[in-house]
Amino acid sequence: MKRSEKIILSITGGSHLSVHALMLAFPSLIPVIRAEFSVGLDTLGYVAALSAFMFGIGAIPSGWAENKIGGKNLLLLYQFGSAAGAGLLALSTNFYTIVAGLAVMGLFCSIYHPAGLTLISNRVDSMTKGMAVHGIFGSIGSALGPILATTLAVLISWRAAYAFLCLSNLILALLSTLIIPVSVRSENLNKKKSPQPERITNKQALIYLYLTNIILGLVYFGFSTFMPTHFALNTGHFLPHLSPAMKAGIFPTLVFLAGIVGQIIGGKLGTKFKSADLLVILVGANIPILLLMGFTVNINLVVVSILMGVVFFTGQPIGNTLIAQFTNKNRRGLGYGISFFLSFGVGSLAAGFCGIIAQNYGVSFVFPALGLILVPALFSAYKVKRLA
Image 1 (cartoon, one colour):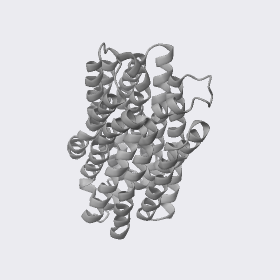
Image 2 (cartoon, helix red, strand yellow):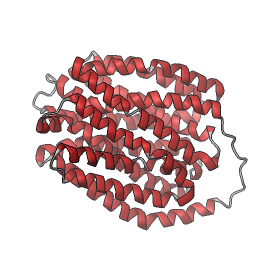
Image 3 (cartoon, helix red, strand yellow):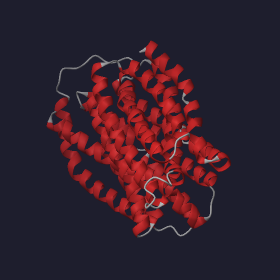
Image 4 (cartoon, one colour):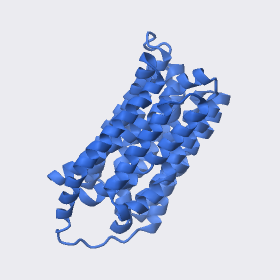
């Protein structure tokens, strides 16, 4: 891999790590915040949905702006803005400030993905491997977010977790200011290569891929929001010396660490098989695992959930590669922006309706419901395969 590609993956990887650590701290803190402010799971589900919706709403304008103002400015805007949101959470004194801080943080975090993924798709030759490396950083951030948040909540305060994340992103912004100009000069050297034929946007395949991503987004926000609480409530006989609050951080961390294995598998599979064929298989494989998550407890629940982490995140580099395959290079940022708005913005609705399910029927029922939601995605993924 060339030096310029390593620089791009380092910059985007660090940002991808931080964005998921920021967004996944709150779900693991739900048991603690629920106790402090005496609010129901349905209310906390709505709050998570608002943060997740903001995480999606800025993706489309960010995707459009990527081609206008450049990746550096967008990354810095994400880093400083999300640090401000985390700082507001660290200083919060009431529940309304928490809601505001999560909304601000989600909005600025929404800037990242279109910029980062477009940089990789345009500047890294082995795109699927690049997407896998990028995804690994994201999985590390997803794993660090819950364990960091719950550990600091137990040792100091849940607010200390957001203070740490705020400081981390400010440091990342400083590093990006110093490093990105080097990567920009390196990228410009790549433009001297012989021009490649322009890819025509495959609109029909893209539409069905977007439909698939909406459903996958619903599943992601449903299981990532309520998985920590599910572990806290249903692993009482497994490692009983651990508090429910710690289990809400440790076990989701294991799941997201398993996602690293999935990203690696996805990157390797994407170089050997057609991405559209893999999409159908992976969508179908998630359904029985989600059903099992709802009907298992203790160590069985942990094992099944880790398997979910591997299978679900295997599909991420595959899906991101398909976006690049179906879009014209000049509109790829917008293509990613629309995709992440649909998967994160529309997908955020799952946090709300899963909160209603959890409050009225129990958190265990959330996961079979998510498995059923995935059934229509089998059809849309099959259409992607036919139209690819």
